[in-house]
Length: 289
Image (cartoon, rainbow, N blue to C red; front, side):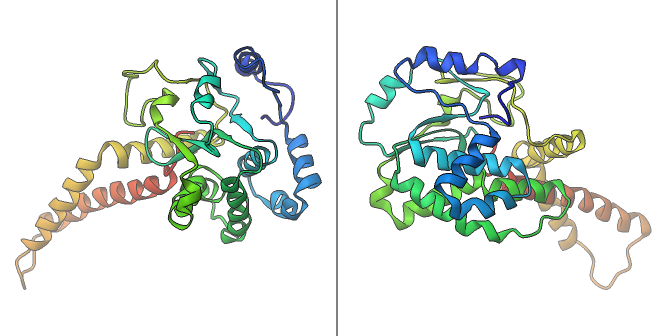
């Protein structure tokens, strides 16, 4: 799946690798044009919302669910390569209606999914996608909210939230869905500075074409990510420190200027860490896709 048929040099070999390892499969390459044609021809009820999405990545996210529901099979992003044939794995799960994969951090990813044609779980997913469409009519121009809007409206966070609700409301159907451990992705978690114990997964990852194009967006995104997940102890320590300072404040006594400014400056710093991390918890609900 790509915007047109001219792939970046890094992804040129992706179709051939999938076909070589799965010779009995029909390989289907999708562009923005062919995806819209699929929606218009077979799911016209969704076309107004499809065209109304603010970001193209939302159309990319939504259309992959329709492709899997309509045809069944395996969906994979262009930056995901198989290390081996998936046929033996599929043969071991003959009754599975769908196969979803966890991320190394939290939730499910939509970069690699498998499903049978017109599966019940993806039928419910499409219905939920349609119902979810009108819940975010306006997105303020902040990176936090932009990422949250995309991930939560069509992306991995949307998929994660839907499936958790699906398990609660339809446990007999959800039992037909196989959830693979994040280890199959062969990706490090967001806090890992180096790749440890990787190499045994089912897939290999190339550099992705991130939807966070702006460099300052990426910089803020990395700060948020590292703040919450990787510096949780620092955040908790800051909250505890601030609480202690407040409880030790002498009643009915005017503090000196030096004592007044220090709690404020430290408190503001830890408040920034905490709120930045809170945003990151939401935006990274299934992230690392």
